[in-house]
Each structure stands twice: as structure tokens, then as C-alpha cells.
Image (cartoon, rainbow, N blue to C red; front, top):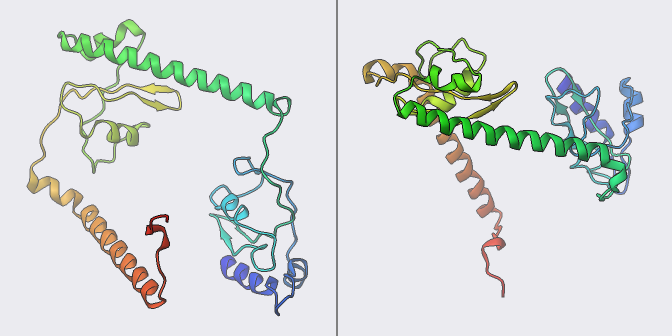
Length: 250
């Protein structure tokens, strides 16, 4: 209902005649909406009070200063629907170092920590791989680094794994061979290092039904995408459009 109301508002904002200007304030007054003016923001800036699920920045930076593209369509988030009107658009610029010194130094520190952590994780992975290859168990191999192991229940691609790293583990390990380490993966608390202790082949008669619906959905999406692409091409042909990007430069 909010999206429909916002769309009606957009219609009220739009110019009613050639050469007329959009009337954002008049439409807001008519529909009883309050206008909120935001300070200038960049494409990567955090905007306080805005529903993070709405494509707000993308819509904002698509606006232009003219009669028909200075206001947006309904921008829909999880809990909020927005309609934007461009107040002013500033050209991009490179700020002075003094203006962004704090952000730059913090970004540099974060980058250095991330790099050091990744390098250390690869060192540990190589050392553990060597130890496991020499016959050591995984838990014993990671013990010199102050790490402790945690064993998950057996799982496959369709299992709802009860682990806070479930999604990461499935993606990391589902195609790794038995007795091998998975690639180190960054997580919130640091880096996750996983080892495939046991791997069994799934019986096709049991495994296929578990992923049947995923296969059906995937095939349906693929078919829909191909049909949509063919339909779009037919519209271009009917309109006698030509793809000039394929022509070589003279």
C-alpha cells in the first residue's frame, strides 16, 4: 500500500505540461507528507535514519537536474518507501589530505591488519597441511598455534547445519577432498580454518531428491532468463535498433 501511495505521489510531482517544472513541495502538501532534507552525501557515505534495505544511494545518484529526472520513482525498502527530489548535485572531487586524514589512517590500519591476518592464516594453513600430511591429526596440528578444533555434525549441501559458520563452512568444504584443508575464510572474529576429516559419496537415490527442488528452480530461472533475453532482442528488432557497439572504429 505504501508503494502504491508513493507511486501516486510521483504522478502528482511530475510536470503536467511541456516546459513545466516538477512540484515536489506542492505534491507533498497535497498528500500530507513531510519533506526531510538530507545533508549532502557521497555514494559510500553512511546515511543515518535511512532503511538500509532500500536502494537509496543508487536511486539518489541516478537523479539529474532536469524536469523529468530530478525526482525518483518509489524506492522500496523493507519497512519504508521513499521518493526523492534532487536539491543539488555536486561534482566529484579529490579532498585535501587534511580533510580525510582520520578516515585514511583508519582505512590504512584496517588494510594492514587484514593483510597481516591473511598472510598469517596462509602460514598456519601451510604448516598444518604439512603436519597432517606427516600423519598428525588436525587438532594436534593446530595446537602449537593456540587454536582449538570444533567438530561439526555430518552435513551435505541440503543440511541445515546448526553452526554460526554454517554458510561459510558449506561453501568452503562441500567440494574439498577427505583429509584436506579448506582455504582460510575471513569471519567476523578472525579467520576460519576448516579440515575435511571424513567425506562420503551420496547415494544418487537419496541425494537427488534432496536437491530436486533446487534443480527445478534453477532450470526454471535459466529458462525464464533466456525467454526474457529473446523477448528483449525481438523488441529491439521491431524498433529497428542497431547495436553500434559491435561496429569497429573507422
